[in-house]
Image (cartoon, rainbow, N blue to C red; front, top):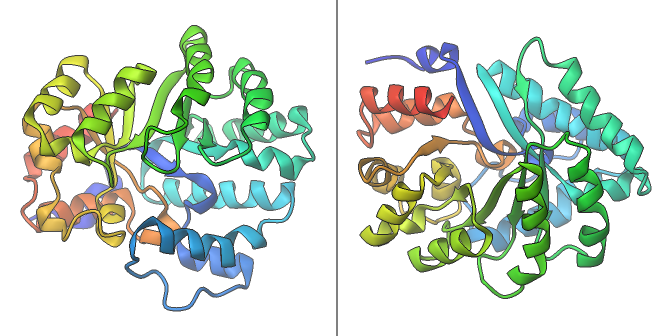
Length: 300
């Protein structure tokens, strides 16, 4: 059986990485000086995760320099894992750390792309939380998207339909600008919600989407539309979305013809790189080595 080094040295994509939480815990601890007790650990869903964010990580990020440092750490840890294409999310809320200076914020993003281009193809994504100030999103998102620095957008937060209409104009603009459209759905919600989000926003990709595995017709729908699902198996296990890695539905999705990648989600919280997840999925018999090679190739 192949060792993990095989997967580390294999070119690959991480298409689901929240860059403010995308680094190894040891790197974060060395920078922050703020230990998080009993960490990383399994959590009782997103509520417990957000409690830790509110208590530990969000208060530590105070200014623009902190934002850049966090993102830089995440990019460097992706490089160390052999990631060659990083489609990483930079949350729109961090513009507030730049005192709403859009030019300074965009300059940071451009510098991160340029300074790392010899080692990784970094494709910034504009992340938007559903619970964030909608007036700020409406004001900032069009300007940031028109910069052409952001190659995709992602909507995350509670996986419910309530309120999604508030973001439709942003997704319509993304379509006109040729920006890839993504949203989080189907980690804790069902197949019906996955289909509803894809249809409502005309999504190109789904972040997670594992709920679709509960309905063959939705899997066919995703396969027919070639909607890629950027799944994060370790995140799904650690948050209790699936009982165990052996029971993860990634193989069912692949066999149905749904395009799939393996992402880290929040490496700080879940502790497993893309390479480690491939190694574990093969070791547990969830996918074969041939399946892993196929996912690695198709992701790029």
